[in-house]
Image (cartoon, rainbow, N blue to C red):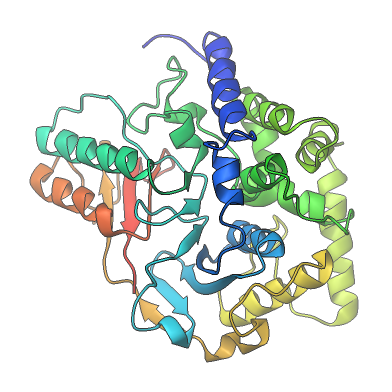
Length: 372
């Protein structure tokens, strides 16, 4: 389809406004209010072991006193789990920065294939079944994913399609989770205003995304702020980035690093404010710093200090299906074996995290990991 970011801008704004105003509202059926109805429950959390996952889970735990982390997904290859759940995933898991069709979750990636008629019929049918499963489960589970709300089509990357993956929700889980909590009247407290606003803003690379992918980010972020309303933390975080001078974020990065050096601590964040690694030591340091900075409670079952007693287990299964012509030489390309590719796609029904990844040097793919 011919077109570009300018020709689709009006339609993209409409999509963002309709989806975010619907789900970031006080209507009982909205994602925000459905999440609010769960905050008094006791729920074990599975969390992505990156800064977006840690910030999001700690933020959620600050307003949901009986939500606690019991599992971390580490590098899409292993799980770090609390000993109490090492025999298998609890049925009532809540996913944070992880998507599962069978578990309530909040996450930020593209989930559905959409309507593209890919030539390989087994692959097309498998993606159609996956989309149907997501649609069915969204009726009973909280699948709080902006790309689902907006009907973003993972199969399309053309600049001329307003609903293509090119124009997906471009930020992290932390930003949309903050907006959901605020919209439902359960805003977390921001005691710190030196680092925390920047930390939330930059989850999943939000600060650089706002400049690098401005055609898309400057639709989604202001609309999200507008949906929550003036004076909200969501709007303050957006305006922090929107009005920032080129060096403002770097100033915060360097200021924190000077504090760290003065304390004699090993680094837990790198210069881009991603985790400096995914070892237990880094997770402990990052979570300890995060709870100290924010005043939010320790969200880890039995406490951050006891993460050394947790168990590292391999994923039960995983898959990467490259559906474009590119891909690593050793990877499965759908065109080489459509039947095998379709079987792997259908295996995502049992996944604890599944999503589409677009572009990059290795090409676009559908990937998922199982439990432990």
